[in-house]
Amino acid sequence: MKIIAATDGSPCSTYALQSLAHFAPPEECTLVHALSLPDLNYPLVTPDVREEALRMTTDRLRGEGEKILGEARKQIPSDFPRVEQVHQIGHPVDVILETARSSDANLIILGARGLGQIKELILGSVSHRIVLHATCPTLVVKKPIAQIQKILLPIEGEEDADLAVQFLKLRPFRQPIEIQVFSVWPQPQLAWPTTVGLSKAMEVQALEEAQAKLNGITRRLLRLNYTCRSQIGLGDPAMAILEQAKSFRPDLIMMGTHHRGGLSRFLMGSVSHSLHHQTDHPILLVR
Image (cartoon, rainbow, N blue to C red; front, side):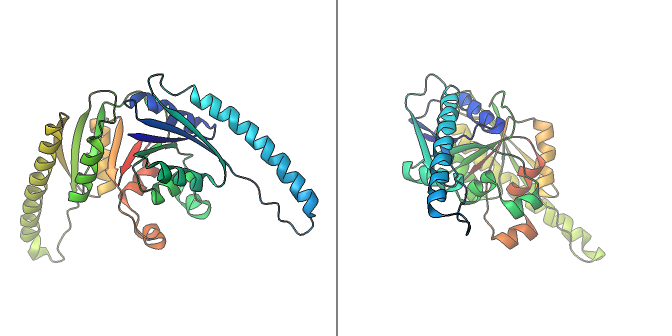
């Protein structure tokens, strides 16, 4: 397993680095810090002044970055056999994604600043853009993680199940894990009062089918020697997951992410995106 851990010296990135203590020693762990240089292409700035200002800024940021990476390295568990550092000029999103791609990473870990949805839409955020564009699983951390022993695994379909099982086969966690597989029936209602009975029949059939699927997923995880049980919720998927998290009290929420285009996602939302804004639980998105 190969892990990319992004750091910018902020408290949230420190929490993300500290979470490495809960992962089994990977084949390789790479610390990534990006130097995001300011745009100095102003009409009244001469080339000589621009070049000198850019050189001074680069030297200052590089020195600060080396200190950040030095502090980050102190957070790496002592039994991690190989730790690399990437310190590059570029936008953090581009540097992190390219490092993950070139190293064939299995997981990106990073902190989140917690931008609101409107501010995020206008300004963007590193964590949101990484989650949106990464091709490997991503773990977003907002606060310190005391342990990773209980995982809530919301499942929408077979694709989610396959991705979760594929990741869990890597044995990524240091401690034994208890997993609760969770599925939500949204309870759609037919339009006319005379169809209430039909709606109820549809619900019963849907719940039976959902439970059968959950049983199949549970058996797959049990064969991997994970402690596992299943649960079905009703209602809005994001709200049902949040309520289940209050009940189960997981250390981590793991789920698949279903991509939508920008305007479509803004108007309709996605469950994973909604959860990022409504819970402080660390969220591991598998893909």
